[in-house]
Length: 341
Ligand code: GLY
Image 1 (tube, rainbow, N blue to C red):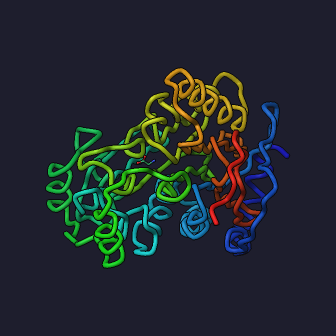
Image 2: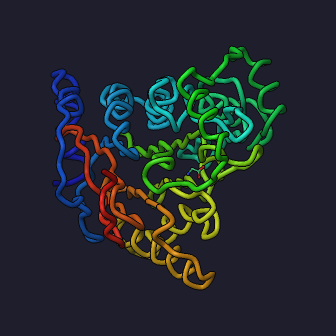
C-alpha cells in the first residue's frame, strides 16, 4: 500500500474514532518482532515503541496524541510521564531507587524531528525530568543542565520541588546500607529506563528517555539515558533508537547513534540492534568482562514504521502500539539466562 493511500486510510479511521481502539486493545505477544524489509514501501504510522512492561501504559498516553494527528514530540513526552509519575515504578522518576547517599537523582533527554535536543542529569526533587529536558531544549541556548543548575532552572520555570524518595524506597535503601553491597542485577535493579520512540502521522520521528539510574549508584553517577547518542538518538531522515540497561556499556559504543547510523547504511532496525549488541559483546571480551553480568537492550524504528530490538540477555521486553493494538514483545537476545525465581 502506498504511503499516500495509507495516510488516507489512517485519516478516515481517526475521523471515525476507530483508531483509538488500536492502542487500547492491549495484548501480550511473545513472538518475535515484525521487522519488515529494507525494500518495503508502505509506511506504518503512527506508531510508538517503548521499553519494558511499563511501556504498555506509557504507549496508551502517547497514542492519545498520535491518534489525533499530534506531534511525535508531544506523544513521547506524555508517554514517559506515566512511569515517571508512578511511585510503584522503582527505576524511573517519583519512587525511583536512590543513590547510595539516599538521594533520588534523575536523568532524562528528549529529541525532536529537527534535531533539537534537551537533557538533564543528576536532577533531584522534580517528578518529571523529561519536561525539564524539554524546557532546556526549548527555552535555553544549551542542550544539557546538571545537578543544582538543572534544579534551579526547573524551579525558575515553575516546576514544583518534591520529595521523590518514597517510604518503600527509603526502607529498601536502609536495608541495603547494612551490607552496602553494590552489585547491579541484570533485568532487576536495571529494569530500568523508559525509552520511547515514535513516528507520527506527518512522518516525523521523536524520542524520549528517562530513568532514576542504577539503584545505589555513586552520587553524581550519570548513565546513558540523558546522553544524546547513547540512550537516545533520532534522525528524521533515517530512524530513531533508544536503549536500556547498563548505561556504561551503552555510552562506551555511543549506542543509539550507532544503531541509527547502521540503519542509514541500509540495515533493518533488527539488524542494526543486533550489530550494536555485537559491538557491546566485543568490547566486553576485549576488557575481559563477563557479559552475563550485564544487560543492554536496544529498540529501533525506521521511517517506514518498521521496528526491531535486541539485547544481551533474555528478559528484556518492549511495548509496540500502532493501529493494530498495543502489545508486549519479548526481545530477541544473545544469551539465554534462566529467569529469577
Ligand atoms: N540505562 C540507565 C542507566 O544506566 O542509568
